[in-house]
Length: 112
Image: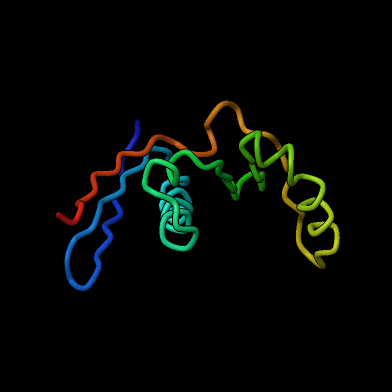
């Protein structure tokens, strides 16, 4: 069974957009990644939704990376994880299709 968890973005007390995402524990991760892509990186909504994503599953401690991230960043990420002290290192794996992201629905209000 799937539940949608909606995020709601406001600017100056006015609604800007709502973001929904399917994917269980990916929902909060996906909302944060989408908003970082749009707000911090300046991507439009479509580009923000299309950007490669990652997903951390606490049990069994696996970091899934969409293929474009996995191919370019796995060596750098692995090197950083090797320097961590204490705790278990997450296993890195490429995600299957877009299982690292779920599915977005992003109604957005445009300024006239």
